[in-house]
Length: 264
Image 1 (cartoon, rainbow, N blue to C red):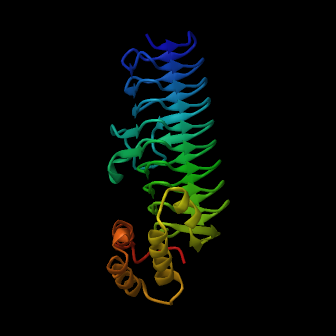
Image 2: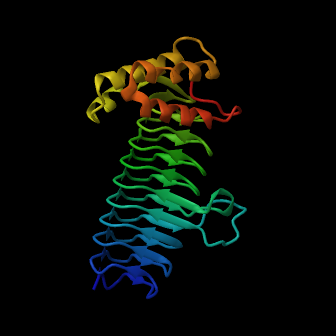
């Protein structure tokens, strides 16, 4: 039997693994599924079609699976899907998806989401990210693996943040942030690449040199985006081991909207 506090209200239709712990005064709805080893703190609300994986730590006063803050939403059975081993701190609010955005808000594995983080409808968050306190994502935002968002970062709807990127405190993103980029400001501007983060993750000097070359093409040599993409595409010829890094960058740049562009 799951360890459910006597004051918690858990719908009998909810699917909760026997090793789950649920704290006092928490409310869990009928379409919720929670995997083994997950703990849910007191005074939390988990509702909607919400699936939570294994070994997550959900702290008190969270609101997960609420309907999207979207006037077009009309009660469709959209979802919130959370992976494994995530830490979700106090007062986080994650909404389900919307029919116009694929219907799913998704959080990957091994993420560290601090207090007051908001994920609006249809956001997609990868693995191993860190969102500092009060990071706020509007609808349809995509965040790649290993991204770090500084406290009070605000991301406009439909914006994408590439893997290994980082924002400074109080950054405001209106444009896509390519992989590896560190940005700061209101609106955010590219300041450098996240070289120290790459070293900590085991990137070789050769791969880091390729990232520096991508940064130079995008931000230092006064090239158009198309010219920068062409130069970046040549890098694997000099550094074959950086080919996956280059491919990831080019795939990201191919999806950049001409109206939104990238942080500059």
